Image (cartoon, rainbow, N blue to C red; front, side, top):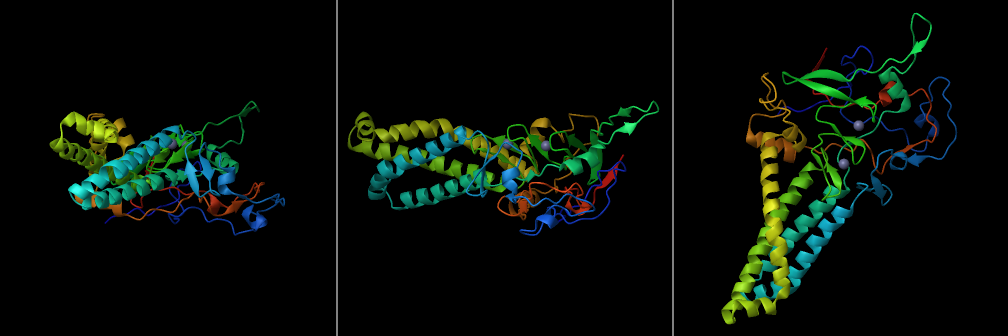
Length: 373
Ligand SMILES: [Zn+2]
Ligand SMILES: [Zn+2]
């Protein structure tokens, strides 16, 4: 399977791929060593200051809990609604339907329901609380280097500001892909990266921002998101079928109205499942198509690789031309470590102006990628 190995892009005026670097995030400074963490380069001001964790100095809008181990978007009201709907519907099902169905049908009903409920909750919480693939913003030094912020004296002696180039082009599997410059994060966005306006971060392999899970869906949590909607589809359809069976069995002993009166909670579950199952099934089908095509929602909505968009021959350069390989690549590939390092290393309050080049965040371009233009 062809896989991405990453190189550093030289963000200087030359604009060419230069030093090969590992695809891992920049090497963190040693624990507790303020001088080393601050760079310690020639003449740097390495003040002794309180060391802070990365999430404490994080400039985006995400919120952190449990000492930075849990990340959530700034607005998590809809996520609470999702959690409340799932917990209340499943709670009613296990309390009012399962005992009757286990007695009159089979004990497999509560067992299957319990397994599906466990899958739904674990995948939901993992999607919501995991770093989706946030890219750290450039430090002021890196930004100055990249943007060429230094004033350039013109012939009249006045200083002029030289704006950064807005796009760069790379070739990925024979396809020219434009890298856009992010003015907030002060860097060229790696391929498939997009800036989430709600979280105010650039996210790798950005799929979309999902208010229902209270997080962006990206490179590091797409798999659990897909598992969540898939297991939720099965759970909703299962509860829907079980509740109908429950009411049918009760109505055989009396009439249907008295069955409804005997189990009013089932009516509530029926209404919730009926109105949600169609959209959840549709979403699962849509994401199954995306997984099989190795596409993201963002690319599909924008029509990034649609031939209708331009007269050029444009196919998805990330697709392996095989549904099975695409599914394996999206669902079974290794999950990269968080470059954000939520619970890990510390940064000093004052960073030395001279940051070694090796600390500049690297971002992903496949090895078969060559800068052009
Ligand atoms: Zn950005
Ligand atoms: Zn977001």
